[in-house]
Image 1 (cartoon, one colour):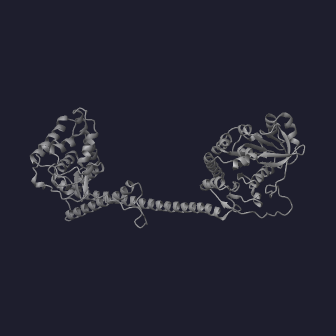
Image 2: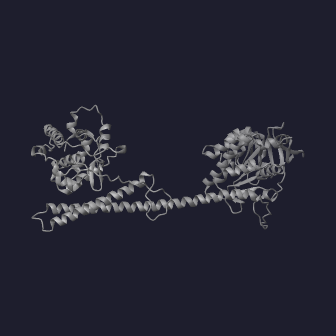
Image 3: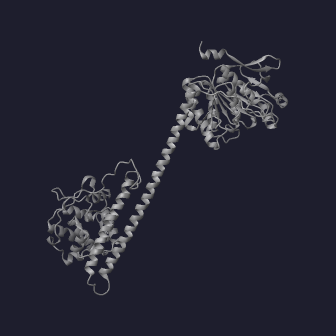
Length: 586
């Protein structure tokens, strides 16, 4: 005979009827049904629940008790139950991470469990533990379909009448509505039936009404049981109750429940000395499994703390690098300002002017290199989705790829080899409102490039990064670069860079023209070739570089042809050519 068949025939004795005959409950109805037990404090509701649980344990059927007041551990005086909770008196301290294991022990290992939520200082933590444990039990029962009983003390805290029910309450209501077909039963216990959601009470197939005295509570009795019972429920003795059972022909029975056999941990303390009974312990192997879960949780928390410490150190290092970068920029600006003052100061230059100016320019170049290095280090950490670790920090991260550009030889024609533009050509670099002057710039640049007869020495590179490379047979024709420089999105950015620099209109576009025809030139090369102050050239190149129009490598500059093409490609090709003129504004 199977266990289910045995349960169908087995009954448990829980008390006596008014005529002295025994009151027996069918085990299968108790394990899989929905019940509500109520009564004011001291009327016997917890004793009644304990009697039912004792009889189920005696018959070999496990249960899970949600103990909100820590009063069910007395069952361990005779039965091996796992007492799990937050107090040191529990067999094991558990958290949400133990929910799946607790459900496994209860349903698959037949371990009775007292889930004691009374010791949690954080009510949300206790609520989450209960919710996840019940969720795991419900999920497993859908597959196992094993008769099992869930007992919930103070159920009005989870399924209150009048709203305010959270996810845990909704889950318990779900168990009440759908658990029976999976073999999962539930008993809700409360001393205030008026505070319990009526949907839960009316769905119960066995109910126990102990003594109630408050009008709101007796009104519930009147509505559900009958007005004659509402008058009598106030006079019931301790342990006495009205019982409604779907499996009984009698609508309501007056019953005297028997006393529980185990230690009554919920009794009100008296003057007698309190003596805790000897309690049975559960298997050491079960405790080991739960301890392993606790240990893993502690290790995870330690690892989280370690990672948070590393992140904090990296944040500090980033702050240091950013501060160093800002300082370098400030020093660079100061050096440029001093060099400019020396170059344009009142009166004749001192004897040491050239040497001092050369020293300042070298300082500016070194500071520019340092700024590039710091920007690369900060950007490199962000591009990998992480912060830059401290230099001396232990890290398991893979080393960052070299962000530098391969140093390739660039054959740059000497400045003297190129034809010097005429005064008329240079005067065409003025960008006033007259369209003829603006068009003259384009003609002058194109004419100059044609007369030089050179090919650009700037390759697109992989992915269009604009890296400086050797002259190649497939390098773009000079007209191609001129076209790129005329395109509205490129012109807009060049103009913006010019306005933010120290170059005037003529000087700025002289530098742009020279760089377009002589990629790989340094700032000093460009300054010498165009007769422009090197400090002004530096500021223009810096602004162009900040807008991703030029690339700087080993103090040499070149236009990022790939980037220029990308800008042109993104622009609307249908725009009328005449709109281009409106872009050339100082």
